Length: 205
Image: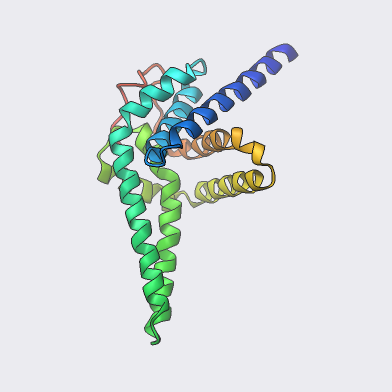
């Protein structure tokens, strides 16, 4: 019994390390960060369902499958972040009382942007849906499941702090963080057929 638990633990560590390494390598071109992140969450999704998934082949298959949508999401998300930052800069230069009203509005919009970001990739890899529906449902889930959102934020913050104090943690922290976040947010998804084909049968949300 103990040997079985040790084997499963070592298998989890090796899979997390491999997935994390693949994610880091495919993020190097910078422009591929979002497709790489979508592929990582896709692998985590199948990892939880199938247990015996081949990390390497699954990652690159999902990277290719989700490239277009995840790249569009990433481009849109970065553009929105740029606009939001620009609004903060412009608002900060105002001298009227409107400055504080606008600043509060953009601050709340920024918080909403951050919490929706947590659900974007789990939703996009879990369901076959249009870009608009992915964003819409990520928004609805982030607001309606605030307890999961808060816990996910703690996971992300913990991973960042760990990497800052122990840089070697970067070799595993991202994949384990994705695994924990997906484990949380997937609880609000409808039950799936675990025998479905990862590469062709995502459900419509």
